[in-house]
Length: 313
Image (cartoon, rainbow, N blue to C red; front, side, top):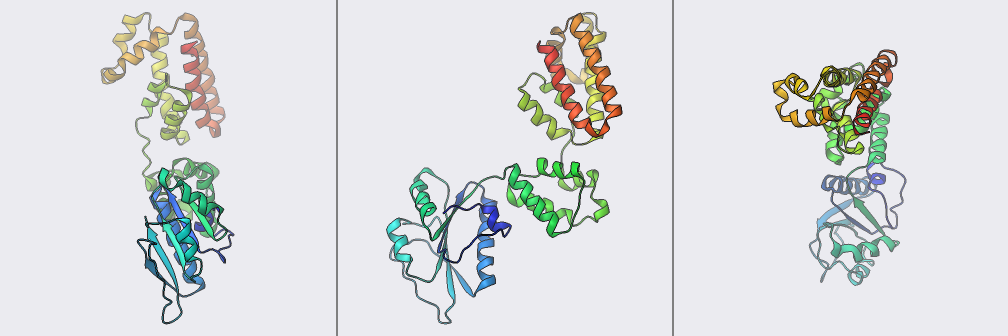
C-alpha cells in the first residue's frame, strides 16, 4: 500500500506490524534519506535489529543471527526485484527497505508494492505547500515556539522545497531566543535575497503568475513594499511628466541602460487618458499604504498588476 513520506518523518499514525517491505523512490534524495533514517530508527526503538546491505535478490539466503536479532536489509538500486523473488522473502523474519532511482522501468514493481498488503510504497518528491505547513507546524509544536502569522507564512513561502534544506533552516530558528524571532532575524538567518526590488517592475509584461512569483520572492515585509513602491512611483511619474518620447528618453537614468528598451515600450502605451488613470492609481495606492499598513504586501502586488492592466488596455 502507499504511504506518505511525512507520515513516517513526523511519526504520524501508521501500522508497520505486518510490513516486511518498503519501496522508496522519487527524485528528492534528501527526503529519501530522511525517510530511510526514520524507518531504521523506528525499528531500533522497538527491537534489536542489525542493518545489512543487499545488492541483489538472486540466490539470496538469509540466516538468522546468533543472538536472534532481526535483520533489516537495505538495498539501494537492488537488482532482481520482482514478484517471484519477493514472495520467496516472505518466509523470513527480516525486513527489507529498497531504495530505487525513479524511472519508467520500475513502474510495474511500484504497482506491485502499492497493492501488496505486506508492503509500503513511499514516493519522495519536493515538498508542496501543504507538506511545508505540516512540517513547520510540527516543528513549532515540538519546540514550543510561537511566531507571528506574517512570519509563519513567510516561512511557508520561502523555505526550500527540499527537505534537508528546510529542516536545517528550521533548526537554525532554535538558536534564536523567542524574543528575537522577528522578520529581520529570520531573513538574515535564512539568507533570503530581497535585493533588486526595482527589477520586479521590469517584469510588468510577463504573465500574472510570473509577476506574482517574482514579487513574492523579493517583497516580504512592509518596508520592502515601501521601497518597491518608491521605485514604481518614480517610473510612473516619469511617464506622467514627460511630454513626448524624446523628452521621456532623456529622463531615463543612465544606470537603467539595460531596461531602456522596456521603459520606452511602456511609455508608448500611455496616452493622456491612461496617464490620468495612472495618476489616480498612484494617489489611491498611497492612501491605502498609509491607512492599511497590515495589507501593504497585498496592496503593492495589486498596484503592480493594475499598472499592467492600464498599460495593455
